[in-house]
Structures are given as C-alpha cells and as structure tokens.
Length: 305
Image 1 (cartoon, rainbow, N blue to C red):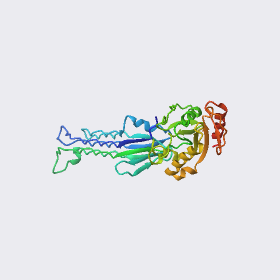
Image 2 (cartoon, rainbow, N blue to C red):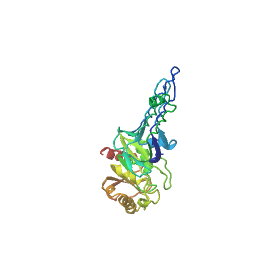
Image 3 (tube, rainbow, N blue to C red):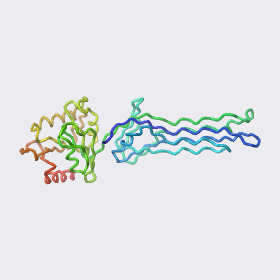
Image 4 (cartoon, rainbow, N blue to C red):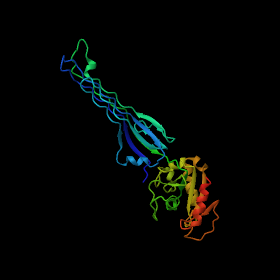
C-alpha cells in the first residue's frame, strides 16, 4: 500500500539546560552551558514509497542538546536528523494551510526545523553583585511544524480507467509488481507502482463519474495524474460501450484540471481474450495479459516514449 498523504509533526531538538555548579575551592560558579538542539533537515529522494515510514511514527524530532556540566563544561550539540521524503511531496503547515516546501527534484536538502539554543550555566550569571548565582537557564525549544505531507506521483506512465478495467493486472504483467486484483470495483485503494525499463508506471485507482466532486474514491487520486507524462487509458472490452466509458473518465480529468486533457494518451482495449470484437475505437489497440504478442507490442510502444 502506498501512502500519499500523512500528518506529521517535525521538530528541532530542545537545547540542553545550563548547569548550576560551584567549585570546591573558593566556591566560584562553574556550571556549563547546555548544548544546542539538533537541526531537522528534509531531503528528497526518488523512492516514491517513503511516506510509508509514517504509518507507525508521526512525530519526528532531532536529538535534544546535552545539559551543561560542572567545571564550565558545555553539553554537546544534539545530533541532526535527516528526513527523506519522495520527490513530488508538498509540505503544508496544517495550522496555517500554507505550503512551506515543495520537493521538485531528487537530491534537494533543506534546513526545516532549527534546534533550540542551549541554556546558560550559572557561571554566565556571576558578577560583582552576585558572585554565587544559584540559577541557570533552561534550554530553548526547537522549531516545530505540524505538517500535512501530500505526494503527487511523478511517474512516466499513468494507468487510468473505470474500476475493474484491468489496470492492476496490466501493471503486474509489465513490471512484475504485486498489485492486488479481483473482479470487483475499487480493488485498488491506493496507487500501485512498478518499473518498466527504468520508467515508473503508476496504477491510478479507478475513476467513476463524479470523481472530480468527491464521488467514489473522490479526488484523492486525480492529483497523481497531474505529474504523469503519458496517460495509458484502459477500456474494458467486455463493456462494449467504449465511447461512454472513455468520455466518463475524460470528463472527470477535465473537470479536475483541463491541462490533463493535453497529455499524451495511449488507449487500450483490455481483456481482449474474453470477447471477439473488432477494434474500431479511435487510435487504440486490443490487449490481453494472456496474449504474449499484444503485451510485447505494448512494451515496444512504451519504449518509444
């Protein structure tokens, strides 16, 4: 299962506390300063499954700074942490609703939450009027962001079509993926990914009429088609009413974003082994996962892109 939207809290490390301490001889203060909290960085990666790391842990923070010690010894800085997220992820501040970061390229690195400063030890507060200060400063909290991570898949090919149009079966055949398949609608509840000759193919969950307004699985997966380079439109050959099925999906794409209608498109009539039909629908060709020649023909076509 591919997670494409999660709520996460990011936080820089808390600064270490300053120390209250005195020398044995002369009773002068020698409490050290606390170390600064670690910083939290965001790094982008080509691994599109990385949001799955938040299925169990949704609070991510850098290490706190170490407290100051006696002998004027400062605590060390907390360790930084790098959170690796998939390219195509936008980070939205859940409290303000403002997008604060968008990962558009692999290998980007951003300082996202600074660690808090360490507190001062009591030796920092000594002066001519107070030679034995009995207090030290607490460390400061690190920066915190409560965020919504929203992934829009950056794939080379996107399989679209009505539910049960054979998209997942085709993905499995082309890429060796292990997408769940069954003879009922909405088998695919999250996008599935596979690799073909170094290219990413995304199986987008089935669209229905009204999907752009929230029906069925809603608009949660329409967003993934925005960054797909080529649409592979699957039409179930056993339906016979190709035009209506085709128009239904195209209308939903256009209602969501008119730019989606400008993308390159490959039209497939799937499950051709189940019925003998003459292919007269636009510039399409029939295909079946049980027909080796048709699969090889599709592979050759995809290689041209």
